[in-house]
Image 1 (cartoon, helix red, strand yellow):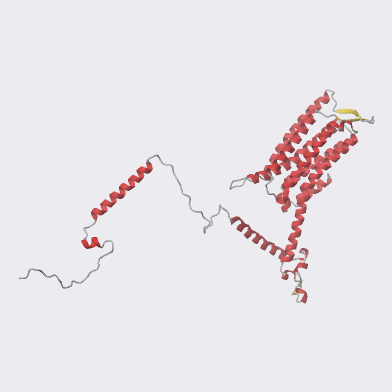
Image 2 (tube, one colour):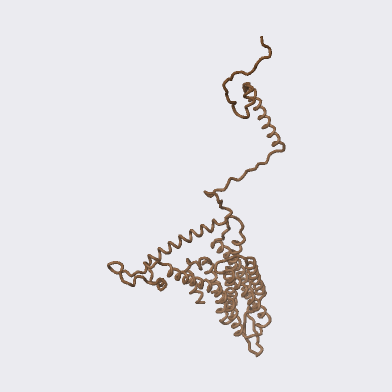
Length: 395
């Protein structure tokens, strides 16, 4: 329980880191809250059996279950929605939307447990005890919380919710998530489904004949195999990837920062010693100047922005390859009445024929030379030569 509190503080402190921010730090905090309640159930079960202890144990179990695994299922639902979106405008589910959905689930379970508590208190007032007295195989008498039909209905509901989470993880099996988050969430739900199913079967056939101390040990082992493993699967990969990114970034900077950034400075300016040409690979990130780190980060961000723009424009059907980035205007079609196209064509032909007729009437008469040479341009002009024509009849 104390580990969950420490992790909650660490997550809140590093909420702006990439590994934590990509996993929705608010949802991660709710997962920790649910795990806190699940571990609290074992603490409540440690005390002597009583009516209050029986009610608090069930409240801690159900509220912790719906907060923890409800948040995990909502994260899987978000991955599935983002993966299945096929529109140009992607549907993005915000953290506030997931918190609203989780609040609805929480209020539903709260109402269910309130009804359970009201009926149980009514039974107590009618002299119906919630405790049962049993005897072990060794003859030891003990008191324990009496199993009710509400418990079986609750167990079936838990298994149904977990099966729905498995369905979401299977539906989003091809979705690419950062830091393989979907894989770890699916593993957490699968382990909870397997362990809880076996525990509920053993609770019906084996646990009623055991001493309460062994039942407490069984609850403790069940919590460690479910809640603790869920805690490890959800948070350990994120911190590991975060430390891996920090180490890789430090190595990259130690290899790419210019040598001038590591030259020692004195009160009179840069030293002119022979050791100014330091080996870049031997300089660590802690020895760097903050101004140089800031300059290198700025340069890296610019390169990432340029690479991102090139990647977006590469083979993107929504961006035209023409200069200016504008697409050619689309052709527009309109529905017309039947026969309108024929009437339009007939009117155009009639107007063209009428226009040609008017043009022909207005043209002046052309000479035979113009008619002959009309296709070859104006005829050439030659000087008159002496006629060679002689008449047959002479005086």
